[in-house]
Length: 87
Image (cartoon, rainbow, N blue to C red):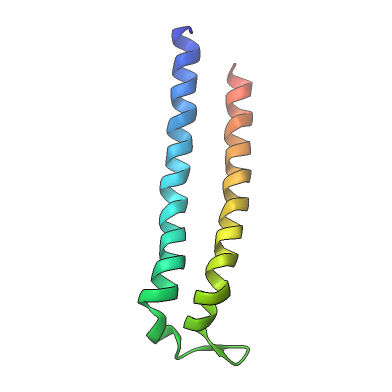
């Protein structure tokens, strides 16, 4: 493997790790933080008659996870197109 393609590969993986470093904490806060740790303060608010903390624990974290998968796919597609143009 040449140095140029190795450098591009390293940039690609650094970009991938940066995306993961941004999205994984969001997932952790949504799943663990909002659904478990901050459930009591969130229960003061209601969505559709249900306490917001309960909603996050049951459905909200799942919706956020699905949205993060979509964001990851679109973001990585953009990165991959940029890497292909550079080759």
